[in-house]
Amino acid sequence: MNSIGKFLKETRENLALQLQDVQTRTEIDLTVLSRIENGKRFPTKPQLLQLAQLYKCDKHKVLVHWLSDKVVSEIKYEEFGIEALQVAEEKVLYGKSVTLFPELKADNAIQLESRRYIGSKAKLTNWIIDTIKNETKDVSSLIDIFAGTASVAKSASQHFPKIIINDILHANNVIYNAFFKNDFWDKKKVEDIIDYYNSINPTELEENYFSENYGDKFFDKLNAKLIGYIREDLENRKENLTDKEYSVLLASLIYNIDKIANTVGHFDAYIKKPIKYKQLNLRLIKPSEIQNVEIHQENANVLAKKITADIAYIDPPYNSRQYSRFYHVYENLVKWDKPPLFGVALKPQAENMSVYCTVNAGRALQDLVQNLNVKYLAVSYNNTYNSKSHSSENKIKLETIESILKSKGKTKVFECSHRFFNTGKTEFDDHKELLFITKVNGK
Image (tube, rainbow, N blue to C red; front, top):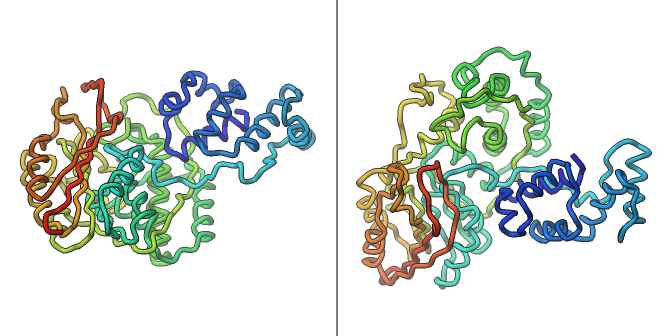
């Protein structure tokens, strides 16, 4: 792989963009994009400028870096030939890749949004927050009460002084503490532990709980052994780690193994084909501490009776997919109490099952809305309620949400086209994300 292709790939992944997203925004052919990232061809100058603009990179420095690669292979002069030749000379003389501009190197730390998660709002956060800001006034606090990936909470933290984050899942709570909790941690200490884990040869490890259950299923056997070893080692180190350090290490493990999991993005099933081994090389997450944040792990309807905020952002599960079951492997990895597992998908006994995934979802939403002490309600909803798949069919109908919200105050609805999670049974030509903004009566 040429270094410009590698840089473009790492930058895209750090921005949580799929190749299809890049194709849509630049109109560069998907096959061409893939070959560029794999080092099988150089981008043209117009293509590179398009990508640099999309990725918000310094165009001049990206072009110089691109030319340095071309000079090495072609010894050819162009607009930045002198600078490129200097880089090429070092590459040729010393036989190594040289970074002319250190700031050009993609940040190797993993961003919050770089995670596969059903219903993620990572690509919608700007639209959601902009809409909320435009439709509210005199607000200083927001609660994301079904936070999920917490991408909305992260974006909101740039605009509102106080943020409250809640989710019932154990893995999500660890991730929130890792990325957002304003607490002490020794980055060098954590990096040294990561380096140690990356030095381990998995062929020398013994079988463990994780590899015995998930090896050659959700992960290849060698990586499953390494994951289990790392998790056990983290538990043994816990007394010598701060809560933040422990959370950062555990969240880093989750984000890294997510990229090699033998799944389509969740753990309701694994791909029943031989798994090609891909070395697990841990990278650290990139925490972005929020100065004034509360983090909760509680049933949303229970928490609603205890907290106060100016805005409540509500994005509950709307179909029968239970998140605690879809992400049971991460829940098991975080809790690490090693329970017996059942069925083909190797799930533990059910816990944290959401009423919002049942026929009682409408009543649950009404109860939530009635008990929230807020000035504004912002409710996300997507139009999958005509789905051909029973599991994708919304448990709360559009008219039910409208009725519940209008009973609380003046309600506006906004819409944005959005690609949706699809297991293959559902097709929509015009899938949209809806956002309701309600100004609560008397607030």
